[in-house]
Length: 261
Ligand SMILES: [Zn+2]
Image (cartoon, rainbow, N blue to C red; front, side, top):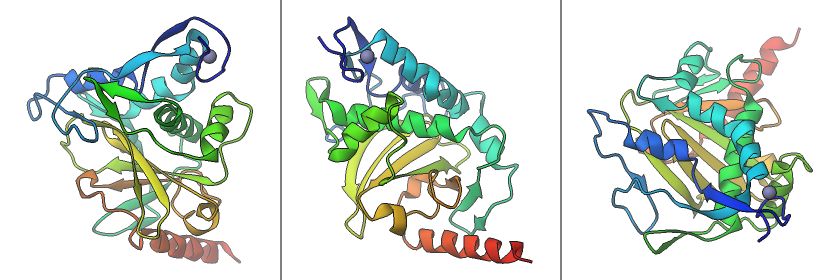
């Protein structure tokens, strides 16, 4: 069988839709949330069963692990702390209001942007590249059109991250939100743009894809033309992008204005 990523005929190993570490976190004993949930569309019950199948070769699994997964899973919400949020709290917010804060993490030590980009790409791509099942139920397969193949080549190091995909990283602001992970799901933004998202404990990853996102939905993205941004906001109120991008653009314009002599 050919590996889904490198497409070479190699022995396949048991591959996960979400990193095994996310399931391990879901099982961590936590007084607030003793039976955490891994939600799947059409199956909103609680389950810590892993979604996995023979899909990738050992080399590609190692590539995923070394190029983002290990790092990001160490930075997400864990029983003993939440390293990424601690880093954000040391930074001055670019935008701040009662709903959210936006940080420019471009030069921040402790937030290697490429690791987050690679990790998110690997999960979204996995959710698009094949059908996954849990307890005999098929999980929604993402439709990424031409970006699926572009992401595959990016993950192999053959292409840069697709220009027409914008990644938004929302760090949960709730102090005690548990260790929920949610597999990738798809929806439409109010303006009709395709939006896909998933969460691991403490971090919500959202991609918007399409020919216009690089110009119209660029503000506040981790791979924005203007910098690398992360958001601190309540994940329980995940109604996004309602005028938030405009606020970020205004802040960037104001910052550029301040820098001019
Ligand atoms: Zn492979």
